[in-house]
Amino acid sequence: MKSKSFVTLCASVAFASQVSAEKPVRLMTLEPGHFHAALVQKSMYDEIDSEVNVYSSGGPDLEMHLARIESFNTREESPTSWVTKVHQGDDFLGRMIAEKPGNVVVLAGNNARKTEMILASVEAGLNVLSDKPMAITPEDFELLQKAFKVADEKGVILYDIMTERFEISTMLQRELSRIPEVYGEQAKGTLDKPAVTKESVHHYFKYVAGKPLTRPWWYFDVNAQGEGIVDVATHLVDLIQWELFPGEVIKPEDVEVLAARKWSTKLTLEEFEKVTGLKGFPDELKDKVGADGMLEVDCNGEFTYKLRGVVAKVSVIWNYEAPEGAKDTHYSIMQGTKSSLVIRQGAEQGYLPTLSIEPVGKPEGMEAEVRKAIAKVAAKWPGVEAKAVENGWQVVIPDKYKVGHEAHFAQVMKAYLGYLEAGELPEWEVPNMIMKHRTIMDAYRMSR
Image 1 (cartoon, rainbow, N blue to C red):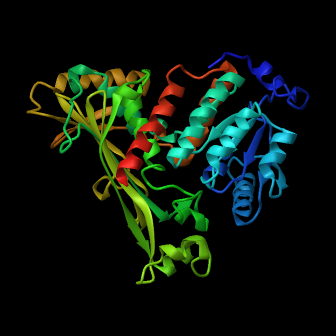
Image 2: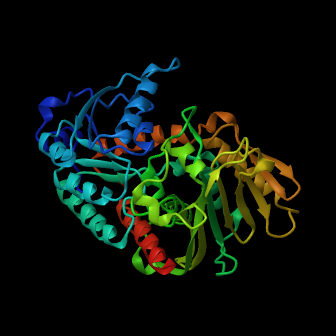
Image 3: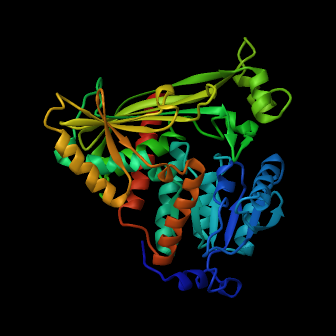
């Protein structure tokens, strides 16, 4: 990425006069349709102007987005102070590019045109912070590669919102995997027994910011939202790269997809109506309604692949609603030659991510090394401890680090603001974003 100072970056797109030195970043939210577009604004930031321009085709998606921003502005505890200017019309993309009242485009919504909008934005000299996925088809992937090339040429920063890198149990899993006295060497695994597995279970009906989440109808159309393999799997592949080879560039020859499949989740009309607020299935989804009257959504998928010889498995599952007291869950195992690092989030763990160190053989002799490793980790995250359990040690994590999924958006934004100020991303980020999507597209094709 070409280096460019923060002030020069603003001036280069011809609206420096509209951007104060104190608040050099001005957001433009483009066609918001996913609640992630609002979560980017759940907090205020010193570098970001409070006025946000929203360009949208209008309709329920826009109304829900504005309602979420208003709820942040009017909450009792730490209310935000966003001022929203709405520009509504069919040519919302062209109008945004023509007017350019900001320098950072936030994209989180219907994915059918997302890659096209990413490319148009960077071609206009605008920075882009995009929700996942940035591409949902092989054709989109071709556009995305072009977008990264143009972003480099224009000196702007294209980045995706990888919130899961900021989840504390995942961060500690990565940290412990770098301590050979406890983890050993990275196991290679096989197709039947992968060395790394990441499984994500999501639910259509859930609560966000304390309120029932209303999803748009197109969320159930894989041509608009994307299948599980190209959507949620973006996070999982990102984490596998980020944990196994931190700070290293992943290349095409490093990846080989071994197996992939997809399957459907069925929803009753009543369930669909509860989560969308609509009456009846829209015409656009009628061809996905079976003879039993249930909507079939191709939202589940899994694939196994080799990354530099390490066999990894990714699995994405969508259910209608979580059991009482549960939330979206994450299971992850990294297998070393001395121990496995396992994150579980089931009923036994109170549906909270819980990290364990589980010896491959007998734990005798490992106690001292585990204590040394935890002390090293605690130097960075004070208060982290290890508690002996039946199958090894549980990593005890203070509640102050368990900030939750919604708070991770502010952490991503702060990292992105740092990249904007520096005028560049770490050298491994762009090639690895491209390889992440290339891996997913290979799995997408094989699942056919």
